[in-house]
Length: 488
Image (tube, rainbow, N blue to C red; front, side, top):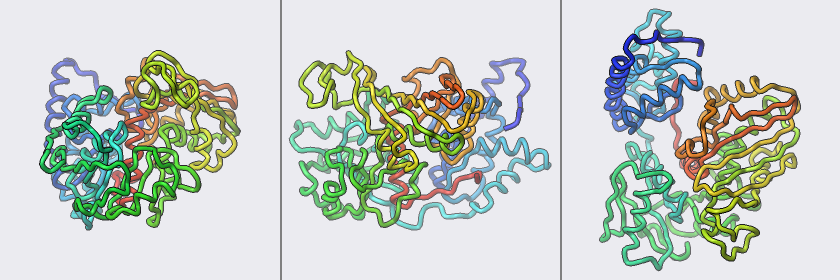
């Protein structure tokens, strides 16, 4: 974006009310595009579907923070209005980018907003509204932190119902009499991520819960061998194993032996020759023939994208990764025996030096990093959001300004926009990144550079941001593809 400033309003409050009215007017248009056409609209990568008026206004403000430029509702409303008037096929459309392009190109050419918008999405007009196939069944094996967040994402992204459909969750037997109610309540209320965005009802008779119209069976089993998924009407499903109990292909293949399951995704680092995939980095390695894939770890997902782009630009000779990681359910609330070193000490009361295999595991995702990185972890008394500190020795010299500007461009304009976010605020802390959908958020204010040595700080929501990455792998394995506009 080149510099483009709106004149300062003479009355800030009157200007606010006008923009607020425009944001309010966008909501039914955004909803119509999503439900009737399965078109998701964005403002510079920020999803607008099911947002409130103030959330939409904040998405506009975000553009000013990272692009050093204004983007107002006065510019985006006509674009969204024009999109809603077209007969569009399924796609993801960034209305913010189209609005900016119009200001720089369309207006200068004397075109109306409607004409320019139609040109931008010309090959989408009259296109298919839904994929020409039935929705793919999804099963969540395990319903802990990642399992419940995956359920939220799958329900949220159900759209017209033609892509992925969550059919069941599998949990261990032996719960309380009101086990189903308790499971649904944990999905409805979350101490870290807040309330579920929608409605949830429990159907005891059908042993299911219904979230925003999506009925999800709750299957009780102590092992995969106990379940015949076809008995629940589930076929050709992708199973997401959130338990971490099986980490190699041999163990996970038990799921494939069950009727109704055709593919498996592991939400933990895979062992042996299993493919470890970080979406945006090496997801091109996913083949139609793959039946078992690991989505790697939250930390590997956080560090692989910045390492990839930094190596492409400056070259990485060697480095050390330190992850300051929120405590997890594996640790003890109070001091008690634990098979792991130090992890028996109270998680809410201590910083705990631990291990991370992410620095080594990243070599499975980026082979050029093999043997170049060391890593360690410090578990800290926060329930969510972690921080990866990358101390890297580069092949070429750079400066703070050059490196930050490069990362800003990557976060805004590269194919890794969904993996790397960018922060230029000197006031952000970990809780500000709860709910981030990116694999990591690059903190530009913390960057240190000394010639060929740099120290970089990358925040990541180790629960929700990671779940979003898993969902992207899941979509690709299911063959879900969206046309993205404007074209890169």
